[in-house]
Image (spheres, rainbow, N blue to C red):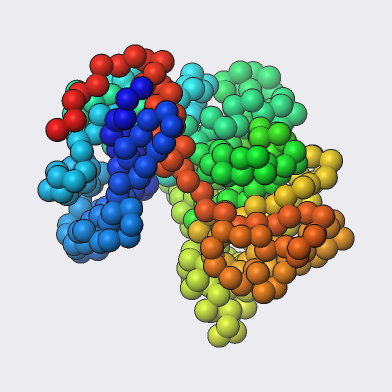
Length: 409
């Protein structure tokens, strides 16, 4: 395949990240990246664009009412910089799959309709992503778009990890473990290359957090379940919780709700938007803010962070059992890469399992080994490259789809 231009779009509930690449089978070179932020937040919108070398080309505050206007701003700002070619293909991150959609594939109206039936598998992520898919087909009618599923990396989970303890009739409805952050995990495996160990644990820690056990480059267990709400406590999500709590809350909400759907929405908001670090601290979902509050003596911030780090520590121990040991532990994601205190608190108490940190290396920035030299278990920090993995999937799907590409401008 000759070199082509690929636009990568990553839609969130209030932002759209994007990046432009020139890519072929041998090399994927990022040309620029940017984002529209504060979608739907009056007076807080922003659109920025910078070259791959870090040069800022555009940074403006503006009103961004919805995802469609956000995409329009991206299209406009890219068009004003002729150094970046018009896209010949577009790759979209899609957090959640469905029982009917388990493979990365080309976007069609039929695919969008299918994904729409399962928005409750990722209620924070899927609606804005579908909105972007629809408007991309309108904005770039001649350009093929493809989805790259965050659950694709976990598609071959063994039954003991994939199945949930529910009746068979429920499981047949597609209720099982799908996992998430797969593009991040896939990128870590790819970056490790020949240094990939047989037994690897990767903790993706950020606004959403998860952890995965990887054997020989394949996911064998992962913390998120049917939805990204499962598993680890996150910024605003509960993570694992006694199902009885949800039943109690539903009964409470049903007493005053106008309808069943209103009661469900009340509980869904609590589980996905009002809990986690934010709910426990009653202060913030941002780890940096919580660290400052801890330094100022906030007991609630301290408890929130302790719940978070303890849950991760438990999962590391569990996944060592799943893998029969571990050769390497990798921290990635915004918190995983940049928060030395969180890494130290997670690893404190794991020395008996062979996991320890070099305090000096742990406080340095950049991708590196943070365990002592010669340690039996290597501990590293690494940045994810989700966009690069999306580009690779797009190239593969284009080859399989044998699309005729719209010429570069």
